[in-house]
Amino acid sequence: MDLDVFTIGIVAEALFLLVVLILIWRRVAFDERTEVSVCRKVRDAASGIAKEHIPAPVFRAMQIESRMFRSVCLFVARKTDLPSGAEEIPYGKDWRVTGVFLAAIAFVEIVSMDMVCVHFSGACSAIRILVLILSVYGFVWCLGFVVGSKTMPCYAIEEGIILRCGIMHRIEIPWECVSSVCLKKVELEKRSGLIRSGRHLYLNNASQTNELTLCIYEDSKVIINGKPSKGAVLKISFSADNPSAAKGIIEGYLDK
Image (tube, rainbow, N blue to C red):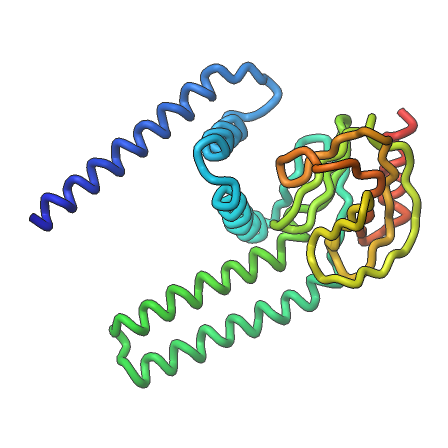
């Protein structure tokens, strides 16, 4: 009986995977974009299918986790997640110093917990294996979160500017929505990655300080984490490692 249930489960999962692959293949086959790679088309197709059939909170969690693994892979490969022709706007330099220290502590904790488990439960015990898996997963999460500001920078392209907060947040703003940019230091009271105060949006993507503010035209819609903003956003503040250089890049696109 148990074997029958196991077999049915395997067959069901295989059929589900087959259906998903067919749906992805159909979307990629009908994707007429020539400027993007096949890998990008597959990723967009999978994301679109997941968004249509998975509840929003679950899909959001899956997005963050996939970015976490992608961030770690990019860090190991010494690459950044930038489209061709994009102008990078780096951020988070000061935060990464603290983050690396936290990642080092997490690694020491893995070794310490493993030694404790081996001493009390044995080298091949289920408890030791479970604790080791959870500890390594937690370390990878910590590493992906820390290096996200390096591997996933903000950037400017011909269509607009993309603001990021590591693996957690992404804001897409077309140039036609931006009226101006100014240098203005703003101290943030909350530690949340994305803070909204009326029509002003604050992206806490480095420290508790924002140095740049984009002024947005009335009735413009910006994309926040894949969805149009709820209500009008007239100002967006964020951080950059070199605010003056970032301001120059943005003004260069606004003057075109």
